[in-house]
Length: 150
Image 1 (cartoon, rainbow, N blue to C red):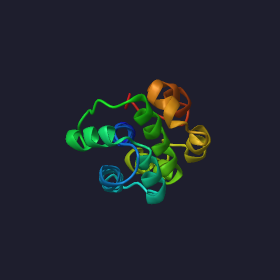
Image 2 (tube, helix red, strand yellow):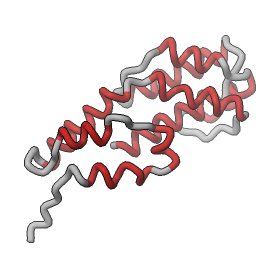
Image 3 (tube, rainbow, N blue to C red):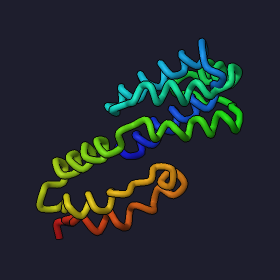
């Protein structure tokens, strides 16, 4: 589920990176991003997404629209910078809590230390996670007991 979240935010970021200047295409990109993030169950600050999309150039916005939600648009560095702002448009805390709940449901309360996970994920930095997804695994694994049935 985490990888799906990162993929969605990455697609959102790339999509946003393809727009600029505000207006028409930028509004369409914002609509597409909001729809995609909400479909993933994220609590999205729509004004924040629209502000970020408004920074995209017309060419970048059109490239994102042409690529579609699952595409990989070729966009400018300015678009990439605007896309990075998308992380601030999502309530990460609620997503983390949902993920912890799902993990507890799947593995059982006896195998998951919720307080430990809350502490490990307290200062979650999605940008850093995207660079090194394994960085959080060590601290998280300290909070989980895996019964190998032996």
